Image (cartoon, rainbow, N blue to C red):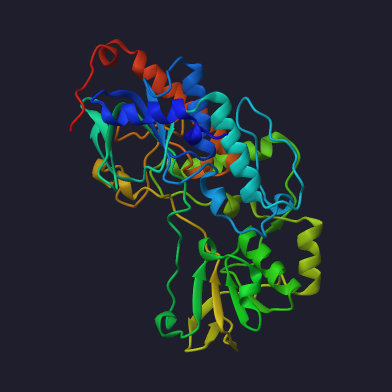
Length: 384
């Protein structure tokens, strides 16, 4: 049983939306970071629906994982880490990761009575710690809280690069988030663009069906065997966080870690499938021109070019720096420009293990603020 099917929890969700009360904390997003934050808010003594809620734009549990393609099986998914307080059992390695994570997150929500309201898609956030943060949904519903933890991740903000001739290309173009199954590309010549693990996995899936592929990356793929000591991972997070502490747009974690050189990928390199043709110079009506001057006929472009932080709903708060980044405090979760607001799943915490730690840090930070006398004594009135 998941939270949204529990009669008591549904009733509580309806009650909090119908009331004029101001919550202590609103968490936006029910993925790894959001559920981690919720867990630690519960441990800090905040009561579900009475003191805080978690807003989820999806119809059910699983966060962004519920949208992943079925051919991304559990054994091919990188970075699946347990949430605090509940182990992630080892399922059939060939089961779709989307099903594994949706089931796990749903069990987690149910076990800990996480106060999820779904579907609730945030359209905008206004206010401040003094007046309360008001979250307005796309359907007009509003909720207000004294502190805000944003955990919306990146799935809803795919990055599409721009190249000369791209608009004139008459073949199909799609992004990672639009991928369903490799069978839809049968009989076509496919250009896969991107230097991350998704691109590599797409290429190998397509090649297994005999589909002709080409691979483009801006720089030579960085294949690396990650050291086993924990200090390496800490160093990676520190390198990514250095930019957010300076208010610069974050680099992706994979740009720092490189691609995992497993036996699965080694075989792809040796077969010639995972060999990049380099950067793109432009497109013709049904062709791609590479930076080395060569040109190839293609039917489809699959853009595995990553995502950006999904933060459009936060625009009214003015959190962006002139260069487009967000200045984060030393704890890597507090937004300097907006006291009382915490940003998780951003920068280094975009990875699942980083998201878990960031969720805890945000919950601790919110609880500390709520305990301060000047905030504890002040209860803003919710705007209706």
